Image (cartoon, rainbow, N blue to C red; front, side, top):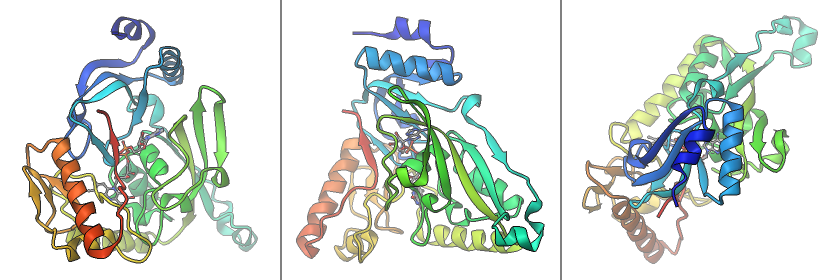
Length: 315
Ligand SMILES: Cc1cc2nc3c(=O)[nH]c(=O)nc-3n(C[C@H](O)[C@H](O)[C@H](O)COP(=O)(O)OP(=O)(O)OC[C@H]3O[C@@H](n4cnc5c(N)ncnc54)[C@H](O)[C@@H]3O)c2cc1C
C-alpha cells in the first residue's frame, strides 16, 4: 500500500520516495527506503511519527549513516532525517563566573553546551575547542551526528560521549517531550537505551574550561592515531565488531589471518582488521557474508564470538 499521497499532505519538510540508502550511509551500500522525510520542525516530526504509528509503518531515524549497514532490498518504511534547520541548535553557555576561587571550588568552571541532534559531531568538537572547552577531544574524527553519537555512546578506548552528557531531550509519542538524566540513559560500551521508541532532539553536555593549546595538542594526537591506524579514504562503517572484554576485535581478526580477505568489492581492510571497506561496487550481502566469514573463523580459531558494532537495517 502506498502512503505517498498522505505523507505529502502531512509533511511540510522535504520528502523523497524510493530514496537509495547507499547515498546516505558511509559504507555506500543499501537499497531504497520507501519514504524519506526531513521534518521541517518539531510539529512536522510529531505529525509524521503519529502517521507512522497509526498506519503501522516501520520508521527509523538516520543520522549520517556512519554506523549503519543497509541491506540491498532497502527499508520498507519511513526513514526520518533531522537535517533541517530546526534540529541544528548549538548553544554555548558563556557564563564567566568561574574566575573566582570559590566558584572554581563549586565547579562553576564547568560549561553547559546544548547541541541539536542533527549537529555534526565534528562541528561540536571543533567549536568547543575554539572556546577552550575541554572534554570532547577524544571525539575528534568520529564521523556522524550528535544524535547518532548519543545512541551509540560513541567514543574511543579511554572516553565516550556518555562521560560528558548531563541530559537528553527526546520526543516519544507515548510520553511527548521529556528530559532524561544521565542515569536513565543506560550508557555502556557502544550502547544506550535510546533510539528505539524515541527521537533524540537535543543533548546537554558539560565541558570544562581548559587551556586551548592543550586541547589542540590532544586533538592532534587523537587524529594522528586515527590516520595511522584507520583506512579513512575508503567507504566504511568504522569498526564492524565490538571489542571483547580483554582483547580488540581487530587483533583477533588479524590473528585469524583475515586482513585483506575479499568477497567481491567488500574487503577486510589491510590497515585495520576490524574495518570492512567498500572498494567500489560492493553489495550489502557481500559485506554481511564477509562478516559471517570473520565470525566463523574467529570462533573456530579462538573460541570467541564477535558481536557486531554496526547496525544492520532493511531487508
Ligand atoms: C571512518 C569511521 C570511523 C569511526 N570511528 C568511530 C570511533 O572512533 N568511535 C565510535 O564510537 N564510532 C566510530 N564510528 C562509527 C560511527 O561514526 C558512530 O557510531 C557515530 O556516532 C554514528 O553517528 P551517525 O549520525 O552516523 O548515526 P547513524 O549511523 O545514522 O545511526 C546510528 C544509530 O543512532 C540512531 N539515531 C541517530 N540519530 C538519532 C536521533 N536523533 N534519535 C534517535 N535515534 C537516532 C539510528 O537510528 C541508529 O540506530 C566510525 C565510523 C566511521 C565510518
